[in-house]
Image (cartoon, rainbow, N blue to C red; front, side, top):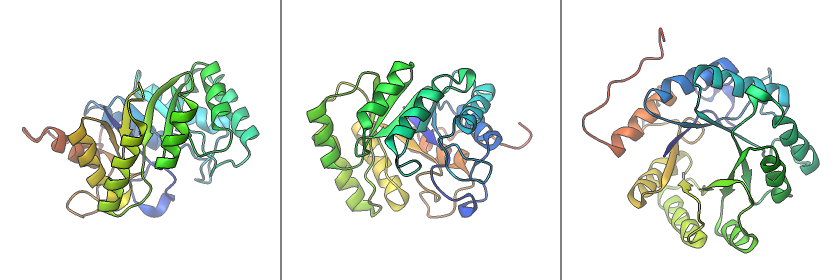
Length: 252
């Protein structure tokens, strides 16, 4: 599986095509879905452009994407850096489960976050899948010792070091430490480590993701035009011939 990670925690002015509003997220999801992408990971924002767990803004972003791309998997993070208080995080997840059309399909939870298992339990109780973020080998050991929470649909091995060689080495260590978890493993890197880790994931037959959350540059080192450009580059790596026709975001 190739997942699209559309915006992440990046500031709105870091790239002219970074999607921030529900409309922009839905636009990008629609365009990359035409390449066959079936899952997107997005970070909803408030009107001021800041990340938020507030149900009204999360629901608006998810509903906008679902209206444009019915059936696509929409995941959002319940991240400690957005809301440090685990009780408020859990309350937010419980509220997301009651959003109807704006209810996320998947909640991304990091294993190193406080009360991560309680957040997972809240998501599962309301029928939302769980995507577990594993940033280090220590996280992988914690997860192996604790066992997978009910409702876990995939693990995400995500080394946060950006040096190409170091990022790949850390990805290898995390994946090896996870062993055979019984659910799919998605692997991705960040910035200068994004494309080397993508190559590693492809070589190992693991799921991967790409988008402006993880990297702003194409493999040639030039600024990517947007999420659609990054997805096209990734798919050309996976299946280099024939080169696919670019899907224009204009007039669609």
